[in-house]
Length: 309
Image 1: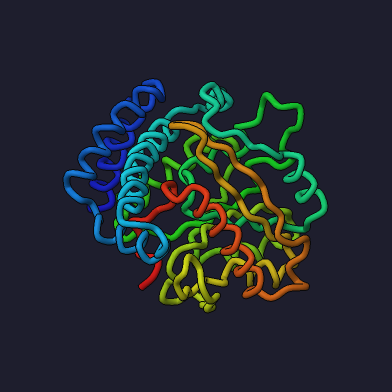
Image 2 (image 1 turned 90 degrees about the horizontal axis):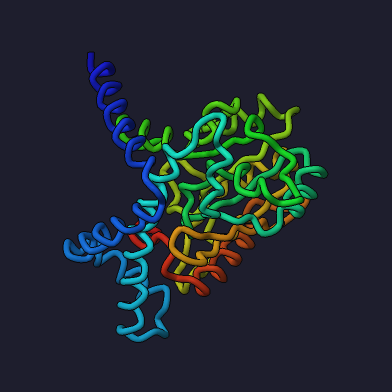
């Protein structure tokens, strides 16, 4: 009975989100301003944001940190609006319509194709910099380009950490994958299932997209990478350990925000075959790349999460 009630609640929420997603992206970016105002007025996790910023940028004055915080809250509101628009926007036949707004431009698809062609499996390390909720449209974005991505949806393994709330876990999973739900996609992987899945499918080529900049989970393997944004940092090495074990190529996904509702994504190779490296050195390289990007655009990082505990 509880499961039935949850299903009805999920259906109702997704129905509302579907209706909202019919509206243009510009409309969603408009209401994002009101959402941003609410976040500021209620001081949503303001202490966490300011402490994170102050420790990450000790050289900046308080006025500069406040400016970054204001820009972050604006981005956070836009991120939510973009995610709602994205989640219900696409149907099976019309998923390519996603690019009508040019919300994401993959700047170097040829690099991805080169890595994909010569790799047994591809590990992509993703962060909370940019808008990670738009990853479900990865193979729809560059349909107008001469260079197409070689892979397809059935070869993607998107890793996630299950939420405590079954309701929101289902809502978020469906929203992220709605644009590819009718393409044969079956690779939305809970973090504890990844190892078993990868070993079972080791003879098939997969692209594993791994968000890996959170504070390590209790059961996760940990490594101290030294200073990341001026703070001693523990990193999870599960993704790179898996890559080393199976000889995957390891790569970094670089996001840049060009304007509200407009991003560019760049595929940055870290190594061709992880078996010749250690998980720790690969994670150190990943965090070095992420730090470069955060310093360039600090306001599009998720400062509300407690990265350092």
